Image (cartoon, rainbow, N blue to C red):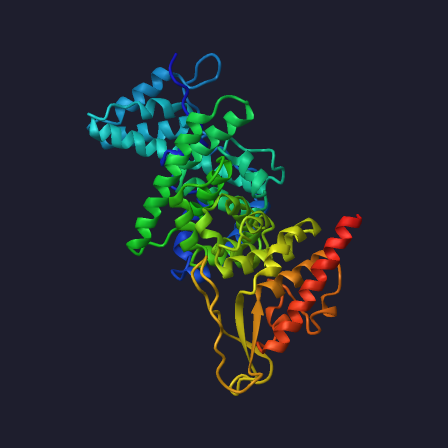
Length: 471
């Protein structure tokens, strides 16, 4: 039995259909500046959706009205299709045009025969493939209209990987636009994602499919990185495909993907989509799946991303990055993630940090050029595992305040415990991104003030241990 011809939606994945109908005409309208693209896409979407909603149901196509030779069951006669295909190589221009029009009217029924034309007859092969592409493009236009307008996310319209995408990213209009862009840009990767997802749903062995997907993700990430090195800006659909693929993998993501993500999140187009309503929600959901699959040496940037874009999955990484041998900045960000996304069970993880007198940040008080208040001056660091060097303060007494890891850990424990931190930190203030405003709990680095704070930490630890024993 001959292989069944793939549906038009599958043709998209093979590169036959270059891009959906609403992207073809709109592409010339999109500004070259990446910063303006999200707004234009949204505008074009509104215009396209509005015009489609007002339109009548889509007709099968401009060539479908004319009658065609049919078999007893109503389908187009295959012998007649073959005759039209042979006619594509006729010496008469009129005969070639008549055959082209007839094949276009035949539509999907002619695709298999058109794709089977022998490439040795170059003229007929070229004409046949152009006709097939036109038929598939028209079919995909109709499918895309229906897909975008359908509010029922369970309708996939034969589009591969839609089920897993809708489950993890959503089915809003902007999410669907990102999905179609992903199909256009990464067809081969989407096919592998769909194959693994289906296998997982059927509870069959997936080791081979996992290895294939992992290897292809690494390959595509490396190729996208090379494109960036040649000043070719990646498109958002490529990142969407990479992140969706990573979400299906067990264990860590390929190092190539992690390196590309680390370098791209704060750059266009990623940064523009993360700051755009609608698109931001979809991209943040994908990032939440990536964070736990990042490499251990990316903890600092991953923890920063979790705080900046409100991703609760950062708390799992935070719980793994409180050891004293780690960089002070990593531990500081880990504590802040616990404040934002943790709970009272994380207090025990903070207790060892209360014995770490490492300085996280130094704030300068009342700088002449900055007005009143505190401002970050510097963050002294030493390599992990080395003793912290004494901080040399220059200038008049009281000009500097320091934020130590032990103070931050105590303030975090008080917040998670539900107590008022102002009992120990009179100027305590919360922060929308970091959970705690570090400047509000910083103290003067003179010996008396430091000793007083150390005593407060010791008293809290003793009280906490007593309460745990009694409970």
